[in-house]
Length: 343
Image (cartoon, rainbow, N blue to C red; front, side, top):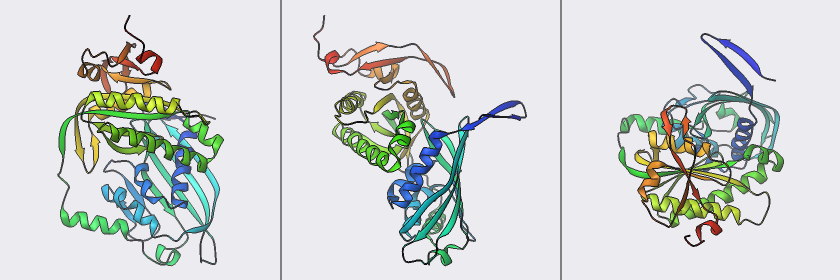
């Protein structure tokens, strides 16, 4: 059921969010299976990121949370009981939230306990990212797990000693986003564990292709990825291989991959990339259908009149947060189209 909440000057629509529910469950499954190196990819890159726990002083923010979240959960013992008691998720425009209750028992501990967690999400590009995590357990961490879980706090203190990070670089690059269409329905049908294995294998294929074409696999974003290429030509070639790799898969489920590419000046800081070019590439990806590669007019112009690629025009698009009409081109990738001789 949809709830309409009257706000000053606007009407907000709050509705259940199967997508945020699936992302949240993958977050908890990643913690449970101790694949903690992947946790930072669930988190927003915004300085407004907050990570809140039960104990005194467990209120952290910014880059230290992303850098330390893996070690934070690694300090927890492995669990022998991890049961979801309640779970729900909602969204309203480009924000959303989930609430979960879990029964947890660590290996070697006599009793189980109940953990309550709220995750707040924002839409960054094409992916939901956690901007606030607030968890509550019945005891302070030192009583619960035998230590104070200082990983994030130590990074915060180190950052204060070093001062603010000022290292940024700028340059021309082609930004490539991928996204799996229908991922929420597939995740629900397969179950979180099978879906996580499938997505991890897909990410490895994408990463290998990016490296073969001299690009940088920057990060995964839920069910999508962000990569950077110094050459528009290499980005387009990589996109072709990605679609062909997905299409050639023999096992079900068959994935629907959409790809968006834009070229321009990007800003790099702390291993991540920012700027309008990145945002536009993400928007282009959301405009693509499963099996499509959409590129901006700038990327199309960068490869000139080469016959190596075949493009078809699409209707101009409007993107939220970006002014004007945006001309996009569809890069044809099926082998029978690319390999047929010129008329």
